[in-house]
Length: 285
Image 1 (cartoon, rainbow, N blue to C red):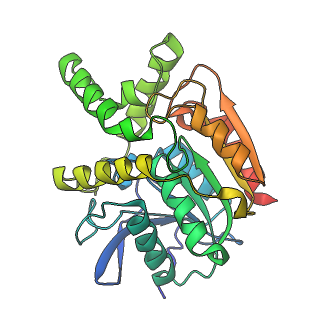
Image 2 (cartoon, rainbow, N blue to C red):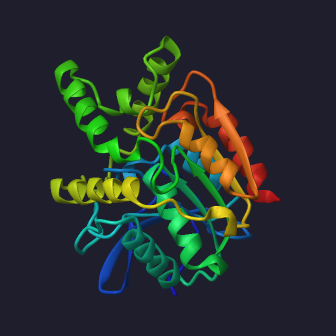
Image 3 (cartoon, rainbow, N blue to C red):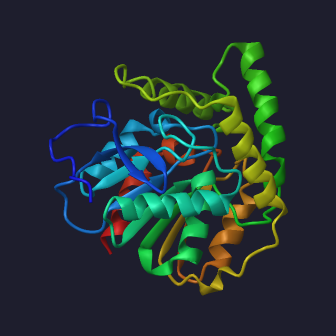
């Protein structure tokens, strides 16, 4: 069992630590270890490493909860071969959670992380208390198999305009969306020292393969998931079409749905103040 990080630090300066399990050295960061209650484990999006979490969201959650984020196998500073299916990533996450000595956790999965969260709760329902899944969809969901195409197009778009692709992938092209995207990208730069390693091309390709497989997978019976789930997204998600968010909420019997206006895939970062209020209230129940 690892020793919790107890000093009062923020996402900007929290140290990166490692724990070894299943032949993998997982890189992780932890905040709010002194907070009581069920720990919250965060599951990250496509092509992301630890530095891609919004500091406002992580620090806001850590004000009341023990929050743990980690790099998937073969991603960022974690060792091993990158996983190429959501099922593999879920098994790795379960391995990590148990290596941290945690008997039950809450999950916060964004985008691909929300897909991994669904697999985790189906594999080991007793390990999970509550889930927050945002910017995501179910297996076989509409348009999920096309995420790779959308991603590559917006990477090219970013290259041609000298902008971060997330400005296009995560946010709408309205004045409010463009402004929110710029603010989000600036927040990601707040951590200037001891940053994570960037994702490799091989790891990105493995994740895109996992997304194609997820999009082609036969829909799963989600009615057996009776855990409380907070489902959130923007009304104009291009990466994982917003229709999937409504579908998820309908198919999960104990869900709450939040849809933000004039926003896309990164709605919970654009509306981080409201999202934190709703997320903290949901976790406190």
